[in-house]
Image (cartoon, rainbow, N blue to C red):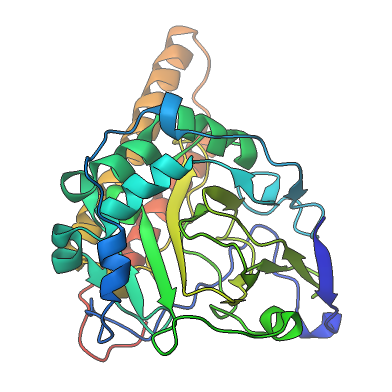
Length: 357
């Protein structure tokens, strides 16, 4: 069961206006930057496999519905976001065989040469591998079976936001002794990441490390009242689903292991008629900006195209039914689409060195 860690004075957390999305604070890193700390050679060597495989749900999927799903109502945010689901407890998603294949692609020569990034949030990341470098990872997150499970937990049909944010890998390791020993109280108090909101509606966070002997590693979320709720840490192959665009959260640091590797994939609603309040704040500084803007523009224009086609069809039906033109209704629809385009104009701009977002 989730646990309340602490209660904060309610006055410190003013309620947002209804349906107003929270502001996302990005990393201080403004342009794609390579890490200055090298990954341990043992980590790379241990990831090698004699044979690469393609993703096979019958062999690699271990999905079981989580025992508990915390709702937006449970944390005082009913009506916010795109679904009633706030966060799940960790649930089985991938088999150990699947994790082995994922790690083989993550630590492959091509991936290490082309896909390493660093930011003030995470010193070592591997992201934007794509189907050429990481076909197993790409196929897994686009698998109908995986998407069905993620959507069931989220309470809404989801798809990956775009290719560049499929399989973002956060890597932390002890580069001193290989292991770290702390007591459980310390583990509960130290964050691996600062409190933040995500750029996209949902994320699925999957554990790629063996967590035996680890202390900590829980996910903490802040409720509307200021209370902090902590959900238990994951095990290898398990995942959590979180509506992170609308919930302030952080990952607590894990102790007792030599590494902690998680894979984060971002999701949006499959339906073009569900609001999309995605921003690029959290990913602009850790992405090839040209690729990012290309994929962002593509999916947003696809949504707009679907909406326009549906509206044109409904207008044709209205006219054929001899019903009068509804001026107020069409103006509301047009204003909604204008806001959708205006939001894109906010996100798409030239990134200058040293520029603050």
